[in-house]
Length: 152
Image 1 (cartoon, rainbow, N blue to C red):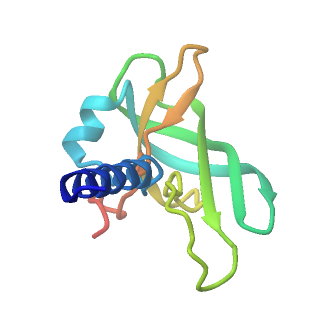
Image 2: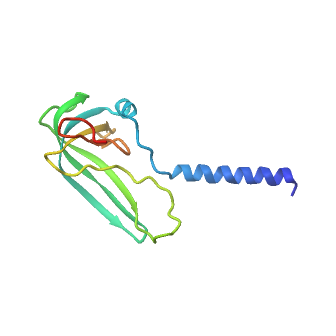
Image 3: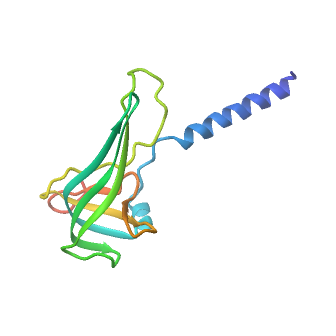
């Protein structure tokens, strides 16, 4: 094989690996501006309950579920109002495979707030085609301090 073909083949294989890795990489947190733009609905309120269905195997701990959210204030959108309860869908994925193993890179889903009726949370939500609410990945739930300022 000529040096040119060998170099071209190595470049192609390197690019293929890079693109494959990027396809399963962790989802980067969005900036406040990106969250604002992507959201159909932005609400401030409290997480009343978190319901999740968990499936585990020897490598992964997966959860899909719903956050029961009590709306206190609407910052964007007209589908909900103060006093409404929203069911906001989420998912998480966590590696539980062997320590030190070459864990495949993969998005881990949503950063979830704690279910605490005293803690204020801002939720950035998209409305799906079926009318369901889905938190924006990965940081569509932002825990706020008691004064309404985001925690650092």
